[in-house]
Image (tube, rainbow over the protein chains, first blue to last red):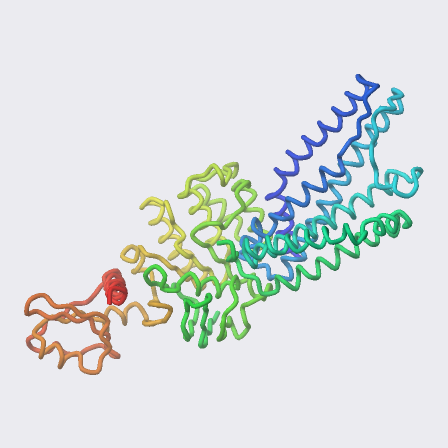
Length: 232
Length: 289
């Protein structure tokens, strides 16, 4: 148990600086959007908090193995425990980032209501289904989406770590190719239709299911991984 | 704790860095793990600490395989040359981490060692000099209380007084609570007096594994005329040969301590450092050929 605690503590220490800096910047941007909305009521302003958090989490999770695997294995963790620690950390990370978004969204919504500012739109995942859903539901949806993105980032990180730049970029290339193929085949129309026909619960369950599947692939790929990255 | 290595091989693509290495280490002891650059020391120590998988062969501690064995690895502490700690943390935070990872962590000793090495808990790793980070590695290793503590070139950037303090601590701690310390170093002259057992790696193979005193007694440099030297070395293993005008020299490893000096030959004991230099010369010669 202490190894898990130690691992989480080490990851917290490794990434807290990034978290603080990003959160400060993101909060400033969102509050700036609110102020601009109040000063310039004729201009429509859409906040992009969840997109920023998603991209940032994706970038951070792509660095996770490089920054922490060697140190934590040296500290005695085996690979299974490392994956448990890394995924546990990313889950906490997702919850923390979603909590920050929750607070900022609540503040922005409070002030827009209080001062009758209609030009500021705060996009929330709950808007996909039911506008009346609470911010708490939105919080869980945000957290599940962020966690799923974190797992994708970890998978890409593992590809780069194990197979070097060639393997990593080839993997990204295949994913992008599949995404492009989807356009003429009209996958996205069906995807969006399907997504909109769900409800919040199904969205959360799907995100967590996808995250768990990707995590299982990451776990399988790190079972014999060494501290020497293929990029070295 | 006993370390049992059997037919251990590690290969990176075409390159074999460890070639069927087999030996047993019985702790507690202070063990010197020596070899020139690229001899396979770090590869072996990484495998021993469970960081890298073997290509073939086995490595066990007290009969348990080391790879992916989290419980066993609580008993092993590896302090490498660099990269032991996250960059954006303070010394105090490293000590907190150590407390969580090492079940036998000695907080009191760690605090005392911080003073001895003049480190402050508020110092940040990324702002510390190489020598200071090395000192923190040494504090971690010594205070970890791990039954197997491995130091792989632990004192990069450390001054002579810091290194001396490290040697003294090693002996002192070993006397207070005997454990297995494995020290890999290139500063052999400084550290050789500490070693009870010495392992010398060469080209991925273990060429010498003997108690330090036996090495001093059994490995000798013999100088003299060719015929007498040939007769002397006979069935013994020759580590290095050279010639200057009519004088032939051979560094010979005896299976047992030689009893008498043959007439016409001059025998000298050889220091570990010199032995390593000769092995490196052999390697360069092989490359040239």
